[in-house]
Amino acid sequence: MGSEIYQDTLYGQLVPSGWDNDSVSELVLLVDGEEEFNIEKDESSKLLANYIDRWITVQGVVTETDDDISVKILGYTLEDEMQFGGDDAW
Image (tube, rainbow, N blue to C red; front, side, top):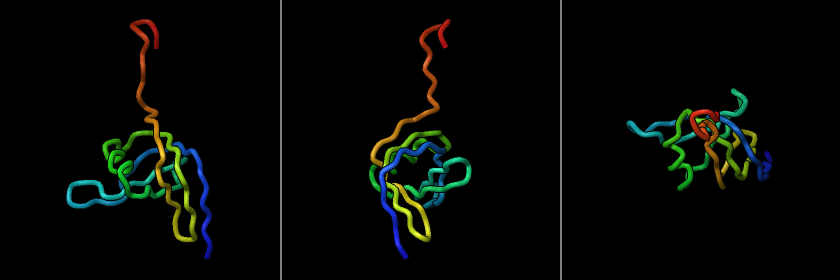
């Protein structure tokens, strides 16, 4: 029973995987619509709970074991925010 630890950049959708009363207690980054990366709980993950169902790119440390895959978030960028240059520029 081994584990693999590496740094990576991942793109996916934030989805809740656990609830505590009415608030999200656990998050998953859903990559390619099928692979789930459990997000390790820390200050960054608390902030990410505000972006449920949003698409993000995360930089982090991935830990793979026989049972699951988790990621410790080092940084992230929200990807679904559209920025417009003006009335004529999209």
